[in-house]
Length: 254
Image 1 (cartoon, one colour):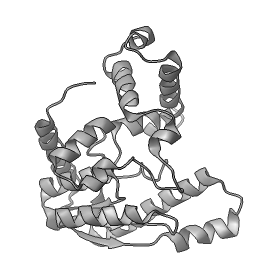
Image 2: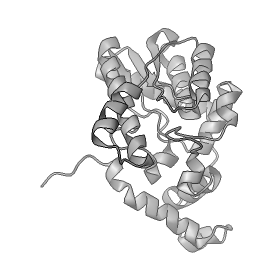
Image 3: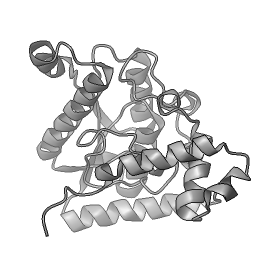
Image 4: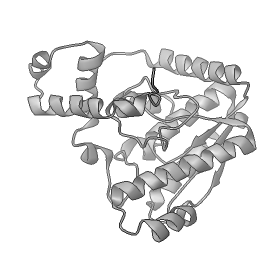
């Protein structure tokens, strides 16, 4: 994997946050705090950039969300000393699912939750006059491990250039609670779900392959020579290709 100066990255992210706010004419940000490492790092960087009084956190649990998700998010908010509130998305999600989508599978239900969360965040952004800070990292954005117009919807992505394994390093440097650093990453969209199991690859392998392919522009054979299976490399390339539409604005006729 690439070697980066973490202190420099913290300063770079903070400068980016300040510029985005200044350009948009805002002073505050709002962050959906999930209890995971990405949103925790995003919130911590926002606090460093603009001060804790200008960061609003929101927890958005569903009735089947694991209790740890809220508890860990709360621990992060209290550690950062930022204002936070919790809004249960179950009534609005279930109003649709129970009326129009009783046959929806776990993926559809998860996407519905992700989009409802973003609806709430953007409504509250108007209430607080605060930009919605994204929490996506480079690994997940590249392979499309996000819900279009759900968790991928935001005003800006302060950690979108950093791989997941780098986010873990940053979290340690930012002295975030161990609960968000040590647990297996999960979107908590259904019971027992973990990101790595759903993608079929560890973040360590994913990041290394992505870095070799898209930063170093190495050929598949060169990456295989590092000990990776051809099928694993091809699967990563397939995920990137299939999710290209998520990273682009909707096309229009020329």
